[in-house]
Image (cartoon, rainbow, N blue to C red; front, side, top):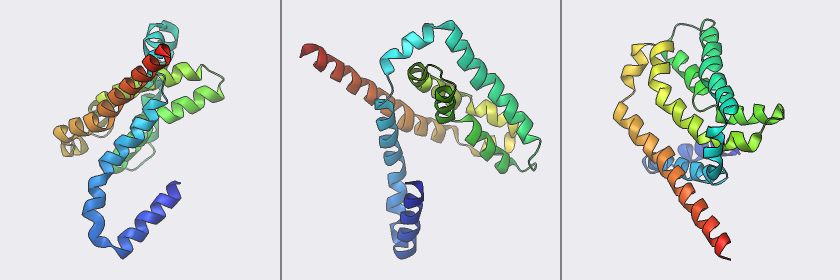
Length: 180
């Protein structure tokens, strides 16, 4: 699907370059819809349960916010001292990394449903820590070029709105099921 999307994008940009503005305006709404669909599959009602399990929560926190950054610090020693290359590596490996977390949890025969439930919390924490990650791993060059207002706007449109919408839909569907 990714290759098909790339091919469609290249085809459209080759034959209708004037459509770039319209298509660019659709990026955030389409991403928000994709995240909404993803969050609909997350058992949001299980988040409080996952947050109460101290052993599970500490494993998630240690892995995501101690071990992964340490691995990234080691990897960054192997790449050129080019701020934007380093920023790309940090973004790919730190935020959002939730798909890797779920895949490896499943492969290790861990509690995948609980991991899925905690995923929105981990994603929110990773995004809130992004400025710190950029400052520590990349420096002020890249961090200064990231407009905080744009990050907040994107965060609200891509995470908060789809997550709240998914929670509302899940709550309404539970209520409908209970009433039937």
